[in-house]
Length: 392
Length: 118
Image (cartoon, rainbow over all chains, first blue to last red):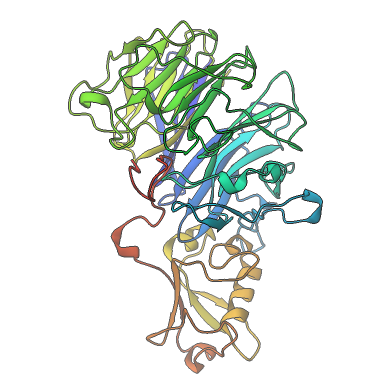
């Protein structure tokens, strides 16, 4: 019998929602790490019981937590999961230290700040954790200020992949209102050396050599808020999704515009089509139909809630351009929540369940690829991220 | 024996309840107390002060004997009442004006900080 485990990061803790393959009756556990911001939690595809969590606080900094039993127990992996003879956890919170070694070639010292002046890189938090597709001990972290880190020892220790910041365009990267964050990491299941990342507001980048060197992949993006609207970098990419069944075809929710690339990001074209607004944060691809994509349109960059107070997921079965509103079961009046960039996910069951969380604390599920929706929970803290594990 | 009171979230993180005590050789300074605290509870490294620079995290404060020690040199001797265990060293989370110091979360617009954050 199949089952699903939904990992929900919120502004005040983590929650785990579980159900069998029918996805009708849900069990809710949590809050874990109560009171802390949980930017992201994600399970290893190699060992689903291995779950990594980004636990963060402006008061107390960054902690990485890890579970090896599907979320029943947790430990900060800095010193393993051992406890002292007195029972104290030995793991130290994790260190994310930017690489400043001479070997990086041309380490960057500044990026653009909100006012256009240059500003030094300062670590703030981990936005996204992406476990390896082949090794449960290996995991990538996207952080603010934007950089990518890599751990080969189950998040015990982290090393920056400095080639990204060493690309040379860093002085043109600038923070969005959420900070200058590397929020998206997409691993290519067919080519282990190919990784895509996205940064607000720098754009998308790709490595083809396992993270040594990176190239910006923003050709075709246009952004009004930078002096050169077609610039190589500076674009506010909100999220990128890719079907593992068809690597190389990417879908992007940009600040404004929904975009598509058929050549691994080398070029992009707009596929916003008949969307009522093409501003938004979340985007995802159907687990079995690579041309079926989902977005959650938001009114505008200055009004971060659904158009006309109607919560809608829009689905395209044609890889973009032609969209249909999927509203059955979603509130269609007086709804003014947001769906954040990492707060949408799909399961791998035959009918492809779709899930998303809102800043109003609701987590919705559609067990039939968007046709019908229902809330799993309604009153969590603001949801920052949603991931789904399909368990057999 | 030095007594230290930690904020709630750090007590939970270190799985502690109530005050913590650490042994520190003289002179008893903030740096030595924090060194001893982090040695005993490694999970606290990086949560009170930066891993490498050892600078106090901006939203934490150090109080003792009705005084704010946050801006004192970490190598200054702590008040005698703390050094003798009569009074605790308080590690306090800033109230932060009732707003979230993290500013905007997960949402962004490339304009002013906090603008359009939701």
